[in-house]
Amino acid sequence: MGKRVAYQGIAGSFSSMAARALYGSGITPIQTTRFREIFEHVVSGSADVGVVPLENALAGSVHENYDLLQEFECYIVGEYYCPVHLHVLGSGPIEKVRRVLSHPKALEQCSIFLERHPEITAVVCSDTAAAALQVRDSRDPSQAALASEEAAATYHLPILARSIQNHQDNSTRFVSISAQPSQCETPTKSSIVVSLPHEPGSLYKLLGEIASLSLNLTKIESRPILGRPFEYAFHIDIECPIEQTSHLREASARLARYASVFRELGLYQAKSPLTP
Amino acid sequence: MGKRVAYQGIAGSFSSMAARALYGSGITPIQTTRFREIFEHVVSGSADVGVVPLENALAGSVHENYDLLQEFECYIVGEYYCPVHLHVLGSGPIEKVRRVLSHPKALEQCSIFLERHPEITAVVCSDTAAAALQVRDSRDPSQAALASEEAAATYHLPILARSIQNHQDNSTRFVSISAQPSQCETPTKSSIVVSLPHEPGSLYKLLGEIASLSLNLTKIESRPILGRPFEYAFHIDIECPIEQTSHLREASARLARYASVFRELGLYQAKSPLTP
Image 1 (cartoon, rainbow over the protein chains, first blue to last red):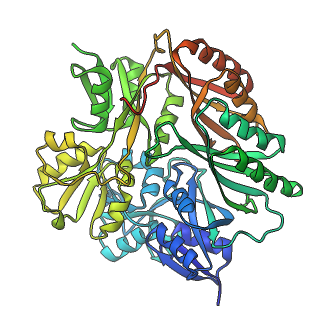
Image 2: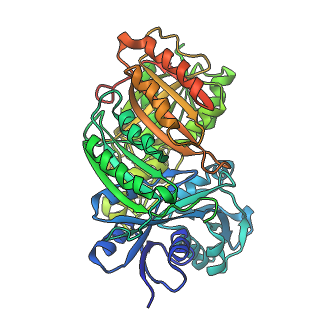
C-alpha cells in the first residue's frame, strides 16, 4: 500500500496533481474538502503526509495554510511548484456560458477574463475539480468550470477556452507536511515565522544574520497580528546551496535569539520553480 | 461641487465608506465596477482622486491594485484603515439561506462561517453593497449578502447574523491616489516598490539604509516577477515621526541607488489603524 497522502479536492485538482508529483502515482489518497482536515489527518496519524498550497504567483499567499502551520504541530518536509493553467470546461459552446464555478483563488487568477465577460457569474466551489464534476453532472451548457486539463480529461469535459489565467507564467507552490521533521541530512531550504519587537532596525538585524551566513532570502511577507495593532509576524524562506546546509541550522539558532516569537516550520530540500 | 472621487462599488460599499472618511460626505462620487477604471479616471482627469483597497488584515494584499499602481502614473496621497465587519443580510430567516453573494475578498474573510455552513453556496459579486442590492431586489429568502451595516441600512435589509468574519479585529487599508504627488510638506509614510539583484544580502543592504535613518518598516512583501523566475519585487512601507520627515526623502534617494528597479508610489501622511 502506498503512502497515505491527505490533500484538498478530488481527482483532477491541482492538489491531487501536486500529491502525485511529490509521492508518485501509487499513493493512497485521503481527499478532504477543507485544509484544516489535512492537518488533522497528519497530526492524528491517519495520514502519513499532507500536501497544501502555500502561495500562487498571481494570487499571493494562502494565509489560511500559514495560520494552520502555526496552529498544528506539523513540519514542512518538501515542496513542489505546480504549473497552473486554468481552462474553461463545459459542454459548450462558450457563448452560452452564464455561470463559471471554481475555487476562489482560481477565480482571482482569472479576474481579467471575468471582467471581460460581465454576462458570466462566478460561483465559489471547494476546488477546481469539484467544479468540473458539478458542471459535468449538470449537463447544462450555461454552466462551466475553471479547472485543469487533467480535470477536463478526468470528467470528459470539452475545453471551451484555454489558459485564461491573467498571465501565462503561473504556478502554485505546494508543500508537504508531516508530524515529524524531515529526515533529510542536507536540507537546502528553511521556512520560519518570527515576530519582532516594534522598533526601528529589528528586521534589519535579523536579516543581517541571514546575510552574514550568505543565505538567500526567497520569500518575506509581513502579516498584521490580529488584536495587536502595530505588531507583525514575518514569514521568511531562506535557501542555500547544498554544500552550505549547516548554515541553515546555524541561521535558525541565531534568529531564535533575536525574535520575540520564533517557529521553524521546516528544514527541507528546495525545489526549483523552473524544473518542477 | 465637492471633490470628484472615483471608487469601486455603490452606496454602502466599504470603498464608499472609505471615500467619505477621507474626503467628507460632500464628495461627487464616481462609482466604478472595476479597479482599473478608477486609475483611468484619475490619470485622465475625470476624477480628482481615487480610493482603492491595498490590504486586508485577514485576506492579505490586493495584488491587482499594487500592479495597477505600477502600471499607471499615479501617486498615493493618503490612507485610511476602515474597520470591516461583515454581516449576513437577507429577508431571512437564516435557516432558509442557501446562497450568499459578496466580493471574493469578503468571502475569503468569512471562510470559517462558510465552512460551517456547507448548505450555503458562495457567489462572487463585484462589491459587497452590490450583493446587498441584488438580494433586496430578488425578494428571495434563500439569498443573502455578506456586507456592511451601512449596506443593511441603505438597502433596508435585516441583519440575520452579525460580524461573521474569521476574526473580530478586521480592517482594510485604503489609499487615495492622485495624478499629482501629495503636496503635504511633512509626510510620515512612504510606499515603494523595488526589485533587487538576486544575490545574498541584497535586501539586507537595502534595509540597512532604512535602519540607519531610524525609519520604521511597517510592511514588506516579496512578490515573484512573472516570467522571470527567481526574481522578486518587494513592496515596502516605511514610517517615521513627523519631526524626521526629511529622512523619508533621504531614504528614497539612497534606496534608488541600490535597487535595480525603484518606484516611489507615494509620500504621504500615515494614519493609524487604531484611530481611523
